[in-house]
Length: 428
Image (cartoon, rainbow, N blue to C red; front, side):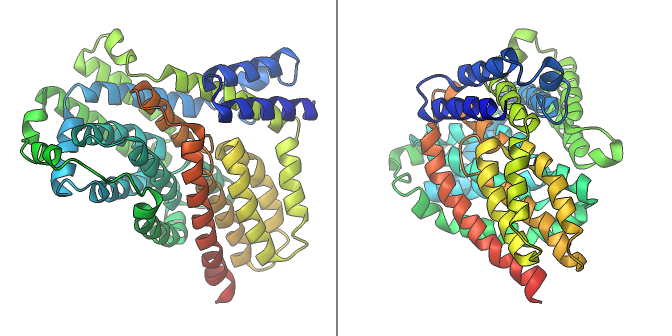
């Protein structure tokens, strides 16, 4: 069954990467096969936290898609788009730097999926106004969201899993992960001109047209905007204080969506039109296929080989966990990878007498998994969401267009993270 699970996943992955078939159809077909031949059963696929569909991710996305869909009717995105262009003097590179920075900072205090759902409509409007390609801007933002999300406990789902396993709180994540994320973000911003070279040519007449616009005139429904603002504020408070309120982000998002539907009086046809159903179904299929790898022990076996190779050397263990996590998280999605690897890291921490070295293993796992999410188009939830949204809006981003940039950014961030871990937890 392990071999069967690997073959099905590899075949599906090849089809997804080649883009010869719709990725949703491939993911659902792969899920159907592992269910039909009994690699996983219905309980494994739909009710298990380890091998099943991650309903927290699905319902978080659903709730935020509904909220964003209603918010779009207010004109708030048009307002923000014009504001951003004016602040950047209409220069595309400056606009990219501004939007990337906003995305990274917001991703640290929200989850990165929510952030890209909010920033993507603004980005597409900015690009449309200036007549430039949306693709480089959307890719840059999702890469920034995965970098920024690494800074805090709530910024990226893998961090929540690690925090729970290692008993690490919000402040510990911010103190240990914040400095390296800030360094990574600065380097990433500096590299934008080179990474997306050729994407910053704009027609001066279009810049002049946008600069002449009054952003306040873009607001179409002030009352609805106020209602959306109140609900979003409550949702953000719920995200930040989820440990206090004991509410998962998915529940917060669904409650927020329901409340906004009631307050706005939006009809089902209107708010459901904003839901990316293809993205949600793709995630469901992908989770089931990955669950088959988890159930048959494939992921645990691979991670175990890496753990056995450390031979009691703490520094080598940290570097190996960092690199292996970056590679595997980019291939199988960082959420199930971290869920599987966490018990192994916990066991490894018992082998080292120095608690600083033991804790460094957790930060290596977090950095590798979070930054590794940028490796491919399916490495992190935010990647899949932004690609699905772009396709729906008529701007398809191919698997390889994303992955070519993602591989460079992942390599760069991991190379910078390695000396940080050595200097902070071993050298001094």
